[in-house]
Length: 344
Image (cartoon, rainbow, N blue to C red):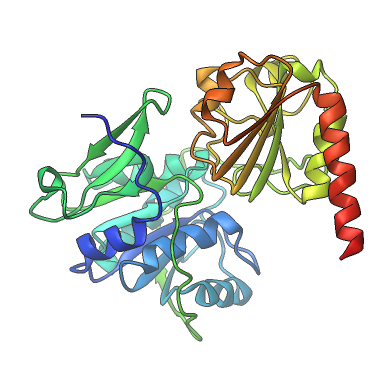
């Protein structure tokens, strides 16, 4: 059976299925004085179930605790010693300890590589199911998905061509969520309880240093609400793409071809071997629509395509399409947007 995407129903589905849960645990790799949009999204989805606890894989400051409380977390599980230098081994121990202490049945995280590795290790240590890139929660009305525990999810497979219904058969389920799943903003918690967890002191490797990769000071492509992406059609000139992204306050994205050519950093890549994104607006410029790119962006809210080839496959998934030269269309659009902003 082939299913269409079940947009906008995740909060209802979670509540319908998981009301029996005492706690839903969220894993976040690190937390600063303010949560990122993607971190807020995961906490908000969890809050649609019930009381939320958060396990943090790095040192936790009072500002971080306050930020988690503002996002709706009632409890925060922190390691006795900062595990962030252990390259996922210590973080996995922390998460397992938090799962046992909270008695959580569902553990949620984003789909960043570090988070996915920690979730996979914790799932293995607890002999539990790991379901990655969950896009929605199945409805209780769909009889074939009803289970004893009531938990069933959907994820896109085969480059987004099919939606699979999946149910865990273990007591605990670890779920990584794609960005942008709709959820209501939870009520803030004034003073979350902080609970210390032992990590066992194991280290598979030791991280010596970390250097964040920032492209142009723009939002991260994985969590941005607006993404303007360019492909081979840019012929290496991402100037028009960057201009429009800056006018919209969005992120710059790219295809694998563009990054392989060295035109733009790899941390901007969208697709099967890059980021999976779900922004409110995705503008694809000079992108043909290869399946490995479309798999990472087809769940975007509104898709606008600019391409001089009217037969490009990406037009098949576009909400709006413009047949034209991106070097002409994008600068005109950026100029019009800037003019509209100046007019207030």
